[in-house]
Image (tube, rainbow, N blue to C red; front, side, top):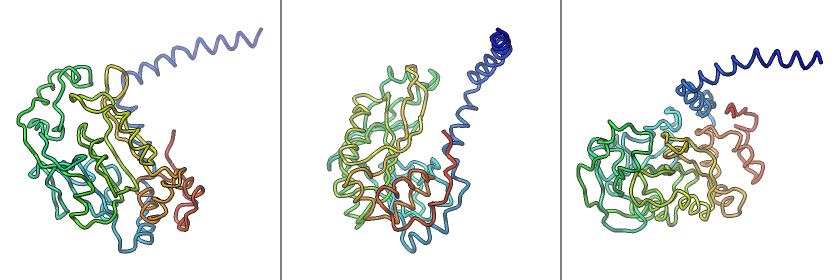
Length: 311
């Protein structure tokens, strides 16, 4: 009996404190978002430059950045000190808005075939320009405030030349692709259909969960397509609130499916490049597990590292 009285007494004392903590968290989503961001950056305190130099020697990682407003790695997906280990190829049909800085540049759109497409240009929000027309009704149920709806007004339509990743990279005499980033406001699936010969070791792709554009493919179609190409998701970061409690979109990260023979082959053919990318992105725990499963030769540099990512 005494034990039950103590429990009830503790519950009465703790309940107001718990309610206050919950209320505090409800009113301070910035704190929650900050902690989520810190979790993703947990391994940024490591400096892998000595490991990268041993692995890559004089080679650079080939990166294709489709939707390169602001330049390569403008979203700081990985720490900026690693940018020098990449040979980036920037893709954007709106040429004067891309920061070239001497990088290779593809001044056309990417698609599943070689053809001309209409680009809906949003002059007040250029990074949201798309091959798909904005849907004002969808914008209303997303996290955008009504005062910002005008940012999605189409200010111009352009007919642009489009081609596949496969054709564009072959024209540039690029034989393999290590890192692929696609942020193209709904056109991601059509672009992936044009990969052809190329098998990236790491794909970062914006995925529209609740698209604010008309007639975009379902996000599940994109996931199914990558699954058929032998890719597996290893990370995601939500973007934007929505009335459904789901995010408007996500940045999703994929690696070759190391549990299947084709995925293993893709990784083992470029083992040094794959390890380098995983270190750069802080995927230490997963890298160790993949090494156990498929057997890397080069595992001295990370086998004893602690993954600081917290769940």
